[in-house]
Length: 261
Image 1 (spheres, rainbow, N blue to C red):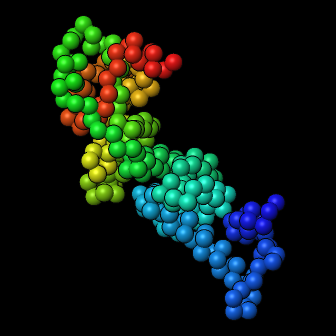
Image 2: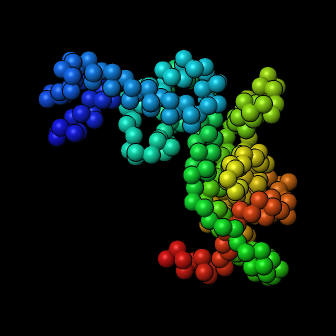
Image 3: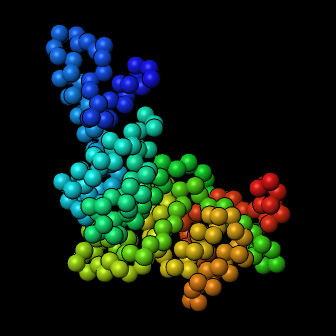
């Protein structure tokens, strides 16, 4: 192990001693200065997680959150100098963190908050030209074979818990005491302009959008959504997608097949 690797490993492992060979400009004890530096690094990682997961922190309290975040940070050093990207695996960690088992919905709330972070930083791709879109939708004989390519920021979360209501309650949109946490909810997250939008979806609409994200044709996505939810309304769902300008490209079935190969 080279000196840089040893230093980086020691920074995030309080069980390791101060790396050898360190000196200070003013002659102070290197071990003491290193301990301060190590603590500052850990605090900065915890702060970054708190910035990305404010609702998770509010749900469990600051003390619990920071203790949990410290365990995560010490085991998961940053892989990128861009701190906005830090903490992608936090939800999976929360799901397996024993002290958090009494809050079973916490991991999905974390997934929703990370989806919002990812949507904010997603590539900026313009929506499809209105004329092109109208021409494609005006040909019913070809319509169901189309593949609708959605904006890179679009994500869907389907949860057995009321993740949207829990998140919305912490935005002041509703009272937390009115939330029945065991009610399944689906959430659509995307960026519209500079703003990240978070919308509750019916289960059929959520599956439809998820299918589009997996490159299913309009026919395949509609069939899956209708099988899951007999109340699924294709016109209403397309209206939602069009209203928020989520389509960036349209492929015919043949073009989509060729593109994937």
